[in-house]
Image (cartoon, rainbow over all chains, first blue to last red; front, top):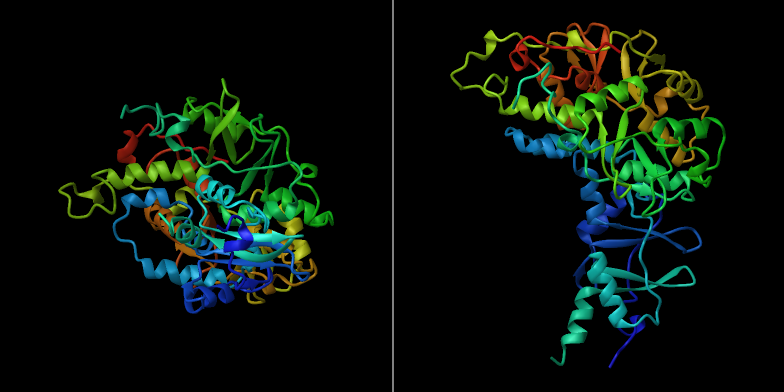
Length: 153
Length: 296
């Protein structure tokens, strides 16, 4: 039975630079797949290949979300297209490094699968980068963990 | 709701406060701080250690000052924070919280629960506007509640020019970013209007834009036009306050520049802070004429 991160991690993953425009992240989310799967999160690495953050669809959606959204329940005639146009204009000034999640939770290649499961459940994350000496070497996805652990059940 | 001296009477801080409070550690860098300001769309962050009473606050103005002083982005935010933060209680009245904010010339208060010493919310002017807007939108007199029986046009409404700030900070398109930072540091305004050589407004630079330039390693010597955001968001002097607020909320703007009419020059600026100072909804019906308008 496989027991650690390196046994289940996928070594094929996308990376971006913190200086990349956000449009580059959007292109990856919209068009790319890795091993046939849609990409929801991309690792951000600096020039040396050291992990500096992660950018996910969630980060981009968070950016789109207007600040005073809780007031919106009372506004019926919202034109969502206009809002998205405005956000698209705003996005041009921002870089991946501005809106990524900088404090990334990661695991080591020899982290035990149960430990990974515990982190994923407690922190509500579905993917964890596997990091060795500051550099990402793979990704563990909750679906792979699920399929692997429940294979024989 | 009980009617009082203004619409907010009887309401408490926890009715309006934002419950998401972001805390950074004193050792986190300015770079990290700017990133969180952008990510969570706030104007200031609380600094402290988990489980302890917060140590200080870092606002966009502090960040701007750090850039002007030539501090590297890796500087720990402890070096530039304002300490201690000003607190209010979640059960304090909104009126007293607004008085504290006005009296201390600050833009936000953090709600501290006395027993646990933990921060349970943040109160800034836009949150108060949000609450007031909420009342307007539910009110039969509300400008957007057309089709109701009440003849809403009979009620006297606040117009933008009545509560706007009749003064605007502005610069020329060739003005250096460094001068813009100097002007904004010494002023109560959060943004500056950029005009071309015909004095026609062509863009805006806000403190948010400046913190972003700092993070992107821009040079302070670049001209204003190279970093300004366009177009200038504006409204008319005679627009009802309610619709101006709606525009700001929908478009995620903190301010609108005010013009008397098409193609006329800017006569003032209306910010969410101005709107919060009104302490009432946007028409006289709201408070049975017992209004109090705070002048800044």
